[in-house]
Image (cartoon, rainbow, N blue to C red; front, side, top):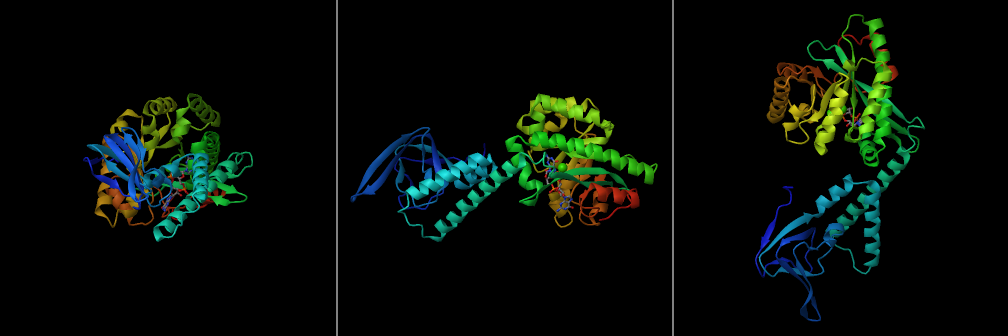
Length: 405
Ligand code: C2E
Ligand code: CA
Ligand code: CA
């Protein structure tokens, strides 16, 4: 954990003074700390802390003036824990846990009611805490509403074309979930997939996505056969979360769904992120190898944004790298992004994989990507994700040829 950068103090050094403004807590890795406070005209000891003790922790949840002074009494090594880190961890955590902590902080605030909150920094802090609380409550609401969203038929899939860059012919689609919640309206997957993963609801949702997307692929293929005979066969890319790969039985269930669909597995591409593989690599490898026995395709999504270790690329049965849209967006303006895009493409080819560039928003991106040998493209320039009926409409009118939004 290289973000824990240690601080070193000699005997007599002050870490912070009573009245200082603080947003860092400290863990004593080695050494000793004296905590004291100025009362009735003199410095009084409150505590002597040693290895493994933490101090200054109130700053992590509520930024106020320090109520005591901390001094090293010998050679001491401290591990600072910043409030920003805790807030960001809290945002990723289970919504219920995050909410409980907010309530506890709120109660603590009330119990400390006598202390005035006056400075700008402190007022900004209040907003920060209350926005975190709103966030936690929203997440709870989402978790609550998600639990019966499948039964209530609130999900639907949109499909975004993936295009062969050399002739701009339709190659396939990526299935992207949409949630139409009666009270909240359309909720973006960015807003609820994380909650679904934390609560485990992604497992039944993922089954529904797979089943629905494969049924749609069969429809799209038969429309293609009718309107564009001889065009290459379509594929369907489906997003799979780490959680779905971590349960042994779940992989069997996904295999059953694929078999029951009657779709040729060679036309199915499962998209997983780098972080899904890294979290528990042994289990992920076993799951992917089992799925791979069906002869389907596996893509790494958002490639280049996740873990920097490339070691796993050779350990997993991967067919495709999806170059993250952040590189493609910036490619024409920033040399660095263009170089990264090029490097990813050439690495994919060296490893006998192909690649898809995501986030193509302008025509000028296409020749650049082609010069790098990128096989497929996806993005608003070709088409936004569309509902099934719109896609069928589009295939019957023009789907075999050049496609723009
Ligand atoms: P992703 O898999 O990276 O999907 C690509 C996202 O980029 C989609 O957002 C898509 O609409 C958007 N996009 C595509 N082309 C362009 C473009 O040219 N410009 C811009 N600005 N954006 C573009 P969306 O549909 O909101 O999905 C967001 C994320 O939610 C997905 O990112 C994926 O991580 C997750 N997600 C969506 N559907 C599912 C699902 O069925 N299962 C799981 N596990 N995750 C899903
Ligand atoms: Ca994806
Ligand atoms: Ca992506």
